[in-house]
Length: 288
Ligand SMILES: Cc1cc2nc3c(=O)[nH]c(=O)nc-3n(C[C@H](O)[C@H](O)[C@H](O)COP(=O)(O)O)c2cc1C
Image (cartoon, rainbow, N blue to C red):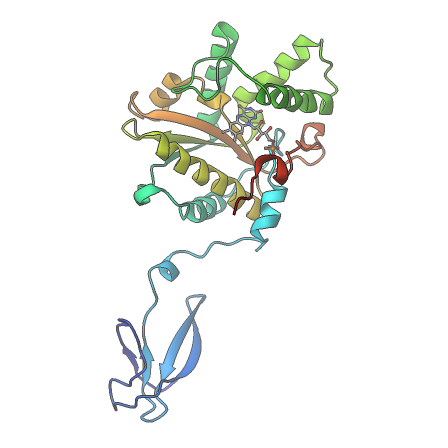
């Protein structure tokens, strides 16, 4: 490769050769550098080679994955409540967050902060959460996730959601101990090797919670792409004081929720049912 590469800055257009003035565009050449594909331009007249650089998006680390479609990821994602005893590679977690950070937010405020907890810390924190649950029952989140007084049609959907879960586990309606056991598994993050905790600055308003939802869904879809499974968990937001103290966040910070992350245990009955959804016609009106 005996040629000099001329670096050029791409302003709005790169069509005219800055060396010989040829005006009708360039030949292109591709080269692999450090595992990445780069484009070069060759002037058809003077044969000088130009590198216009890359835009800021392509400077960011590529997201590895299986390349499934968004639609497929949406269909495949489900709440997973049993995981394999297999560590999650740090690189995959970074890939997930690297994809999810492209979620939109009003004024591009990006109001998210994520704590990734695993290993001994995950174990000790979840032990403390389980203790608190045993001593005092379910704790209070930093904000009201659910209404105190459920109304239809939400009440019915909520009941159906619980019924589907317990039926997959063969837990009968009257089996209170069985239901409690399943609920307690929340505070172990269903034995997932990783918990993501999502925090938001207390000065932010409802709009940022909307942004956060998009971010959290993006995390879950990106996890699917990485071959990983998740369960968003409000339950992991029920002991905010403990979580913030342990992780070194100011007590004023709002803990939005947690998320179990790991490799799905495909043989576990709890992972082998799907929740239903209402049809498009039921929640959409077309008006002209
Ligand atoms: C923000 C959020 C919090 C949730 N909290 C819990 C939880 O604490 N425990 C749990 O078992 N499932 C939790 N879920 C899972 C929902 O029950 C689940 O998304 C819903 O039933 C639909 O099922 P699917 O996720 O399998 O499609 C939560 C979901 C979301 C989005």
